[in-house]
Length: 119
Image 1 (tube, rainbow, N blue to C red):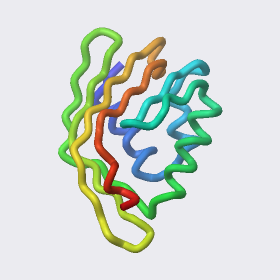
Image 2 (tube, rainbow, N blue to C red; image 1 turned 120 degrees about the horizontal axis):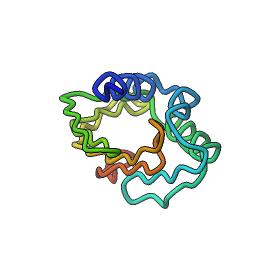
Image 3 (cartoon, rainbow, N blue to C red; image 1 turned 90 degrees about the vertical axis):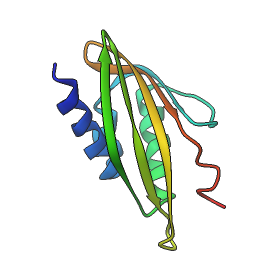
Image 4 (cartoon, rainbow, N blue to C red; image 1 turned 30 degrees about the vertical axis):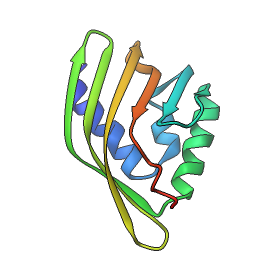
């Protein structure tokens, strides 16, 4: 699999705020952790949590992406700009570490600080 293209498709789903498309990249028993939020387990639960997060913001856009792959691990880093419902923005750095099984994400970890997103 070409993980560069795969990652572009994943971020397209995220930046499009399409929780259903995002969930298509996940295993049924995925564990999803974003920043300091508690982990979410299971594809259906992750899709619902991500949809709720998408609803809490007006938009988001990932940029300056670098993608690395080592075996069944894909690491991506860059910047993400969140647009709040009041049209103000917050840009932060991020790093995703994805553990894959059969080209689907089983362990999805997002390292970033969104503490100022809702401030």
